[in-house]
Image 1 (cartoon, rainbow, N blue to C red):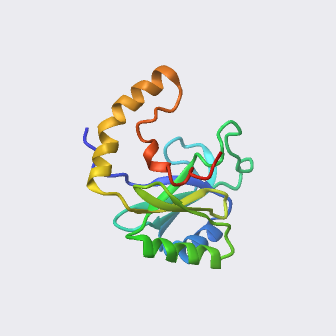
Image 2 (image 1 turned 90 degrees about the horizontal axis):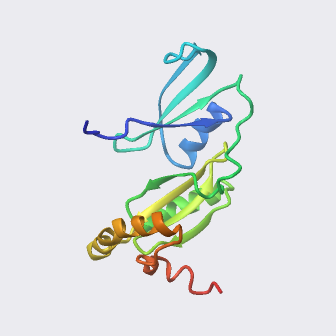
Length: 180
């Protein structure tokens, strides 16, 4: 099998309407469509839902389910909340700064700009608490090659030691320069 692309990525949301409004206002994503049923088509289980599809650009679709009969949304308490996130790419650093200004104008608590050397990014949360990242590439071809060239060795070392291999420590030297 050869995957052509990801069709859509789906998450749960607290309120479908508020989600549509947030993603339009802050992320400039249009609502592509909505599906609602009293039963789940794949399992046939009775479980009313609203499934919304948002245009994330370039054929990418971000989807959400509002599930009013399910227990309140939660998250895995054993996974740090910074781990699971949706990262969106913008064209350049000017658009990253524009996204930051738009998020701050919407009253969001924005973390960053964080310098990952190969890209810079900001972080904030949507109305359901999902962590979002907006990223702009800053990498040179040599940096990408350097990272790729050690990736397999890093995964192998990690699998044996469960300690961070230092092959790509150069990427965050600036971010950690003042951390003692």
